[in-house]
Length: 305
Length: 75
Image (cartoon, rainbow over all chains, first blue to last red; front, side, top):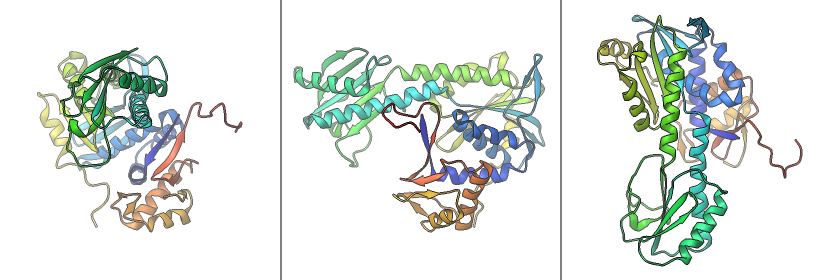
């Protein structure tokens, strides 16, 4: 597998590493970068550590501190020592299996778009595709077969085609979308060309693909990740669990189901990272602790000129 | 950008910095010395990884696992 990173993220990484290098056991963070499957987990961990380090209440951080949890050694990602005491923080992203499923979804959408362009798809028609379960064939061959079936079938509005784990609708452009269960991250709309149309404009949309199997997989993975994070945190400190690369809607649902469970009683806050922001959800009986920790917010990563 | 910038090299970091604030239609609003030093820090802290190259608008690719196509020559 291969990944690439935005230049901006790499510049931020340099600033974050410089800041964090002053803290205890910083070398433990660097080990994660050397292990390529863990690379993006470590990148996320650094981003979260940087946030906590830039809070005015934070006195110092300690990376990979060693604790005993039920006679087993555990190392949360880092401890935050602040005026409020010590908080242990564990960062989690979805399992790579789910990340790969999301990437496969984008590959399928691209393959369908290519297949439609190859057959000179009629301008007056739109194709809506719903993926209901994992595919049983390569995206390119599925795309070719589905587009040909769509063109060979009846040209009536809303004609349904079923093929393996996929169903598709051929519609006139002027008709509203058949697929209406819109969920961010699991829904792709492809226009004829780059033009400003506003969101959900059926007349300009040649292809819409929805993956209804993905949300369930992500939600399951988030639930497991929260449980793993909990088991990694020591009981003597307040805990914080930080989730990354998860749609906030999914993360918030998983957090809401757990926030009042006694097992998560020592978790002071759940944090979701989305679109360069960290969103805190905390227990209603201890809001003051987190509000005091956050204070007026983190100082900027790039100092003001 | 078609040209590859090896961000492990100071000369390449400085040359890339001359494009500030715009790189491949993306804006990075950072003062030039901070930009160059941040890239140097990434290279130094991470031990000069071979993926630390900027080209075509991204840094990478970072590869792991089986990345070799059976049609490629043995690396």
